[in-house]
Image (cartoon, rainbow, N blue to C red; front, top):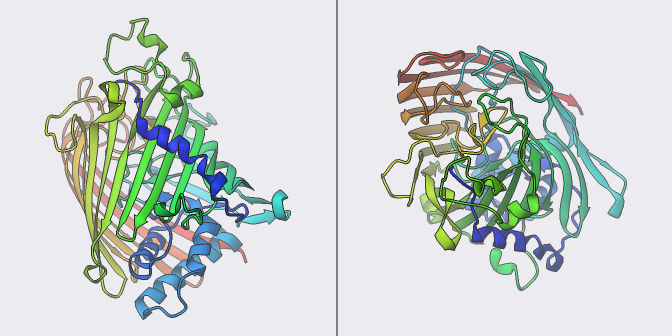
Length: 521
C-alpha cells in the first residue's frame, strides 16, 4: 500500500450521500444489526428464494430496515423458507428486547477469523443491553450499550499499550450505538464491527478480525428500493460513511498512533440476481501527521510514485487509501447457488484515479433444498497485482504503506482478511444451520502473521516469525439448553517456515468454549 487512492468511485459514493433528499423514508432511528452466521445464512435464503428486499454484503444494517423488509414478505411461504423467516424474526426480537452475556474461555492462540467469529486470541467477557427507544417522532433516540473485557487483542505483544492501557487485558465499548434519525438517515455514534463484502471467510476491506470501531457516521435508515423514479433502478440499496479513531498500539517505529479511519460504502441490488458494492477506506492523521479529512476525501495531495520518505513532496501526502468493488451473482433459483468476487486496489492508476494493484477474492456457494446447509469455497490473494488476474506478486504492499508501516490495522490486527497481506489461501466451508455447526479447512501460503500484525513476520524485512505454506482446519458446535448456549471450538494451523514468536507459533492449536445467556426479557 504505497500511496493514497484518488478514486472516481468515491465521487459517486459522496454523491449518493445526497440522494436521500429525494428518497426520504421516515423510518425512525434504529440500532445497527449484525446477524449471527446463522442469521446471515437464513437472510440469504429469504433473499434468494422469497425475494427479500435487502442487501446481504453490507453489515451492520439498521435493525428496523431488516425488520420492515421481513414484514413485507408474503404470508404463505414454502416450509423451508418459512423456517428461515421464523429464525430471523426470533433473532431480531432478541436483539431488540434482550440483552446478552457472552463468556469465552480460550487458550492464547491465533486462528483465521470469518464472519460472525470472535477475533480475540484469548479469553473475553462481553455484556450488552437490549435496544431502547427514547422519545417519539423527530426527537426519538435509539440506543444500545455493550462492554467487552478481553485479553490483549494483538498476539505479538504480552502487554497492550493502546486505548485503555490496561496491560494484559483491555476494556472497551462494543455493540454500542446512539442513533438519531433525520432526512431518511441514521446519524449515529457507535462502537461496533463491520463486514463489507460477499465473502464468508474473508472481507478484503472491513472484517470481523478487528476490535470494534469507535466512531460517528451516517447510514441510510432503510434498505428497500426507493420510491423515487430517479433511484428505483438501484433496487434495494444502502449507503454508509463513518469516521473512527484507531485503537492501535505501536509495534514499529514511525507508525502514527491514533490515526483516523474513514469508511464509505454503497451497496445496491439492481436485479434479483446481482448485488454490487463500491467501497473506500481512508487512513489519515495520527501522531506526527497532519489531519485533513476533506483533502483526503476529495483526493488532494495523494501520490502513487513511491518516492523516498524524506522527499518533501511526499510529506504533503494526506492519507493512505484502499478502494474497490465487489460483485455477487446468483444462479437461477432452482440451482440454489451463487458466485462472488471482491477486488480492492492499493494504489491509483495514473490520471484515471481508479484503483490498481489489486487484492482479489473469489468464491462460490451452494445451499441445500431444505435451507439448512450451506457450502462455500473461497480463494483470496492479498499479494497486490496490477490486474486481478495478474500472477506477478508485489510483496510488502498489501495493507501496508510507507507512511503507515504497521498498515491498515486496529488493535494491531488486520482490518481486512485475517490472513494479512501477502497471502494466497483457499478455504472450504460447511455451515449446518440445523445442527448449529461449522467446519472449515484452509490451504495456501502467507508471508505475514495470521490475525495480528507482527513486525517479526513481515515481507518487507527478515521473515523470523511463522510463514510459508499453510494448512489449517476449524470446527465449532453450538449446543442449546433452554435459553443458554454452549459452544466448544477447536482449530489447528500449521505454517512451514520461520520460528514461533510470542503467541504466533508455527503450529497453533486452539481450543475453547463459550457460554451465552440472555439478560432481561
